[in-house]
Image (cartoon, rainbow, N blue to C red):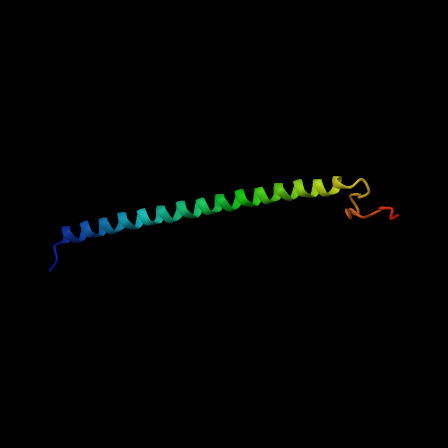
Length: 75
């Protein structure tokens, strides 16, 4: 029959290993979540900048119709 102290030690080592793996998974998830949030923020800012640039690019476009060709006079 196995020694009870030996089993307790093995259980303790296994528990420590599972805790460590759990922390590693949690940290990896946090990093992915933070990276995704940062990327979403960057994309949102880029869209805002692009939208602003497109709306102000042509003197003929308006907020309702951002078409840069609106009001262009052809000769």
